[in-house]
Length: 518
Image 1: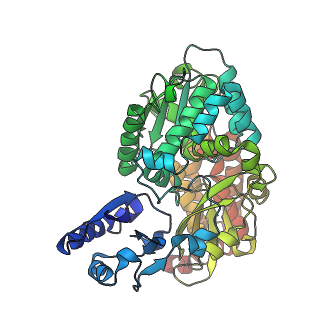
Image 2: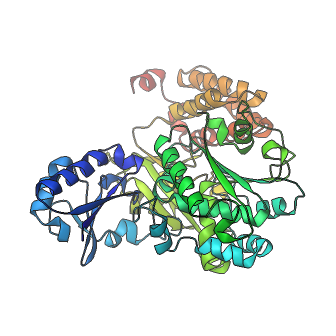
Image 3: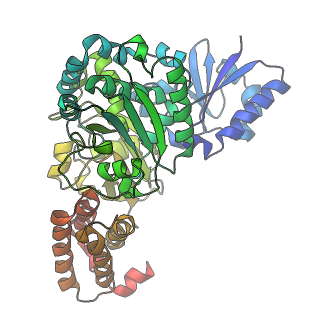
């Protein structure tokens, strides 16, 4: 029997040479006359250890990382196929504190299995949720999702079960399920990791949504910058259809549901659900006025469930284990788990899935190990480029929807970007406006014009021109954008700007020469 070697095929691992390592392992085994099977997996989410190589031994899987092609010969010489000691030895990855302290519900399989093997997926508990949904029936399935407390993981935190119930109750000859995989927030990669590492989970979640609300067609709108995710997910759809997971009779039932992957238009605004629907229809990605809501009149004017990747990928666990089991995780009205993504100036960047309620400090210091530079943490941005900046004094804020809102921030997609004490927060505030100006669809005046005027005003403050007057103007402008913008791009731009003003006011009062010098 061949020795099994697991090497990630995830984009993060590929970017640091995983393909070259896999080829070198295969070549070295062939030269030594050793029979090996190299399985390309997703990533475990320990990015500082990529490329991460694992081997199946009599004592279980053993890991080695980060492995370069220069390490390959010495790995064979030390007997790594049977778990031999090596400078890159990690032992059983499950014993590494970074993984051991996590509560993985959604990412339990990611990095363990061949992402395109349905047999592997079934062996690791896949399809339990869809089978349970088919037994329960549509109404009971929607009730189960509602009872779980699952809320949208894309940022707004709207209860998923209410969306589903609205679509299920709508009378229409056609309904749709749309997955928002246009993951554009800075420091986020959970959607990509899941589509590359466990794509059948998302397919299963969408199939559950389809049979529950009476939709027969689904679309996954994947960010254009994710070619590997798009290719992997497209292949997974083909295999799922061939195996009867999709098509006219889902798993042999009377329910029909099929799926198609669509590549995005390369615009941040298409992460907003109505702009995404416009783009799916072949139009320019522009925000729609609400009402009507997509649940009533969505894709092609039909009732549409539109959820984020992580929302839909949570559903199979809920149906497979029960709503009450899922609701045991988390705090208050924030139930279940959230995959947090650590990025920026961080020592141990990667994915950490925890129940809601862990603090920001636990994430950036306990898991992330502080800054990569070794300098003090000055600011942490949570929730993407439109999220608030938290100073060190607020790192004990719990990561749940209500606590983040109370701290004048948002959880968003769970992206966490760390900055050390060299960051200039006035420049970060200007970047927020410049980002909004570049990515605005242009439909509403507060966003289109306000973002440009905002960048100019912060520039004047940095230059030392009428500081007090311009700070007051900046706060007024933030209020107008928050209250008057059609969508979250314009209305949330105030979050990073105001948090920078409130928590890092000294950066807006620096002498121009000092600001320019830095």
